[in-house]
Length: 287
Image (cartoon, rainbow, N blue to C red; front, side, top):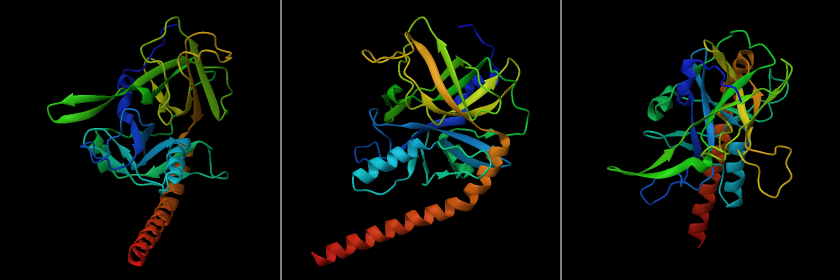
C-alpha cells in the first residue's frame, strides 16, 4: 500500500472521539470504569453552529440496551472513561427516513460542552466546505478497538488504558452520492493490533497533505486477519472498514431533530425509572 498524504491535524484526530461503555457502578474501586474485557464502542464529538453533539453507530447503544434488557434492567446511560470521566445521558436519537441524509446506523444526542472538558476532548467543527473529489484515494478511520483496553497501575490506583487507532485504507470505487463507502487495503504483515472491533462510531476523514474533512462514521470494521477456517474473499492481512457518509447539511438537519426529540426520549426513560422504583417500593411493602 502506498504512503498516502495526511493533514498534520489528523495526527491527533483522537481528540475528536472517545471510548463509550454502559454506565454501570462497580463497587471495586473502578466505580463506572469498564473492565478490559467489557464490550465498548467509539463516540464522535461534533460542533454544529456552536452546538455540541455526540454521534455513534446506532448498533452500539442498541447492543448495550439489548444486553441490559436481557439482564432484567432498563436502558442505561453511557460512560466515557477518559480523564475525569463523564456521563452521556441516554438515549441516542436515530433520525428517521424523511429527514435529510437519514442513516440507519447513526445515532445522535445533544451534549453540554462541560462533558468535553471533563474527558479532555474537542468537538470537530462541521462546516459547509465542498466534499472531496470521488473516487477517493484513501481515508483515515479513527477509533478505540475493544481488544486494546488494558488495566494500568498508577500512583493513584488502577486506571484503564485505551489505545486509539488511526487506520488508513484505500477507497473502493463509489459514486459521490453513495450513502456508504468501503475502504480496503491489503497489507503484507499483521500489525500488533489484530482486531478493529469497537472502532464503530468513530470518525472517518478524507484528507490530502493540506486539507481534510469529515467524510462520515465507521459502521463496520473488519479484523486485520480473517478468522481461521472461515471462507473469506480476503486472503491475507487487511485494513477494511465501512463508512456511513455525513455531510454538513445532514448534521444541521440531524441536530435540529435531536434537539427536539432528545428531551422527549429522556422523559420516557425517566418515567420508566419511576415506574420501576414504584413497583420495587410496592414489592418491599407487600413482603
